[in-house]
Length: 223
Ligand SMILES: O=C(O)CCC(=O)C(=O)O
Image (cartoon, rainbow, N blue to C red; front, top):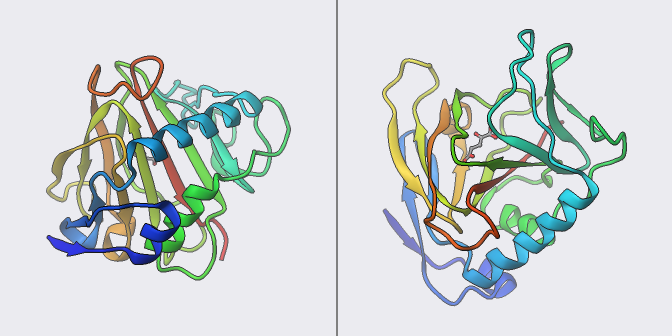
């Protein structure tokens, strides 16, 4: 574990405390309680206005068309979508409304500037909404052109059980709880680590109007 003070971020985001970065296998980083209550509430307001313009949709697995248990939308110049016919991909338009995705909130761009250590901004912010029984199976993020950019994600709402392994599906995994305000960074060897969400602990947060968890995942898509 490494204790650090993120000076730039502290200034921009008005963080008044010392942040801890927890080192995980393969150089993944976990920053518990990176965002304070006010920042989380502001972000939720922004997500509400994003979902008003770009409604949550039910993603479907390639080939089988089986619905995933999360509901999702995006913001940014590109959004991640999946359908039975065309599979996993990024596109500039919402699959149901046909309109461009809303902008990525400034707070998320500030987080990227602080932690990503990458010269270009993120293009996609996937918004996943997990209800009671929603999960996400172990997978790698590999629909992007450039794996040298990290994946940065923010947890909001109810706590989840997050699992991360190595670059092969059968590598050993480590499970831990991600709470509201936590930030995860998949970088270096962990960029291609298998990861997933096994469980949502309902009633562990009052941030959202109803039970559930939101995860915001920032990615650079093109080189
Ligand atoms: O919800 C999370 O914490 C992880 C989300 C994720 O792995 C993904 O969207 O690819």
